[in-house]
Length: 363
Ligand code: F6P
Image 1 (cartoon, rainbow, N blue to C red):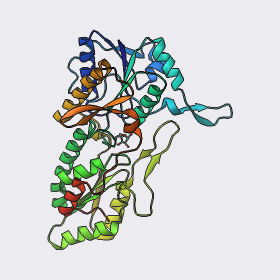
Image 2: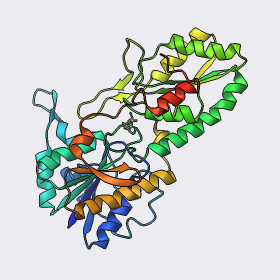
Image 3: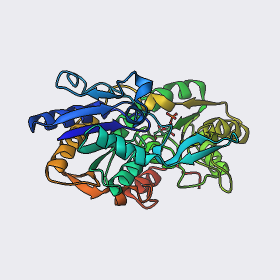
Image 4: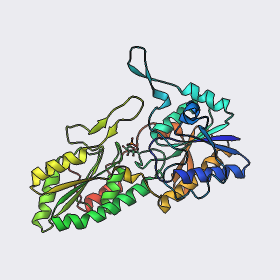
């Protein structure tokens, strides 16, 4: 078998661990593995890489990469091949489906199967390719943890662990200055990172996309703390959170890629300062959540996913995603995993725990 591996979308700690496990498990079976550079670009546009859009993934190439962040083959979250931005003669840009070219390129390069490591965007492309007859196995990656079909995606634990460490550090400076600190975290349209970080970092309010917020409620919580002698507060906000009856904060929108979110933390900090009369500062953790070495948990599931992807191919699967269903790794149809986004269920145990700890959701 000749297998292609692609890492697509935003990077997440653990990508290299998946690559290493998949390569070693494939080599053990006498199979050959190649990495496609930067999503599918290495295959679609080899000229951009001076003919080296495909990287041979040998034992030597994957040595010592388990703990390394990023991805050795690169990634991209622009130029989705299902909606490739293409300039027309009249100057307008329209989104064109170029997946047929991708199928042809996989065949001309002699690939028997594709392992696509990605989030909802990349796995939707993978599902589309599977329907066009490509043998595809998906591996769930995203710090956002917003993929259906798997209990958790790799990258999420590292993001939450780092965000929690940051919140821990903010407690002392917030207390020293009697300030309100607003911490904005990534997560796109799901509140998983904010929720888990907020609970473990013992913040006072968590604002998530699933619950449009009323800042008056958050201000009341801060002032109630003030009256009980707690002169500082920490509010964590997911980048996709929005006010009741208001809009999500979008930085930019471009053809062929998902809209960029951000800026909600600044808005909230300004309003809370106004409402509470307390000095307020904002910290945006942003891409810091995607960098660095994966936690032990993420390394383990990433390695297990990589090996499981090869096992799935050996077992004759296609059009599936490997998924964590503790204690095992199982397979789920890509169709099911990509049908809808996994939001935080409002009645889940973590939500109940947060409320029982007295954390406000601004509702
Ligand atoms: O999906 C992962 C993610 O980090 C989101 O949390 C965030 O909205 C987005 O990617 C940021 O993407 P970019 O790398 O384009 O800034």
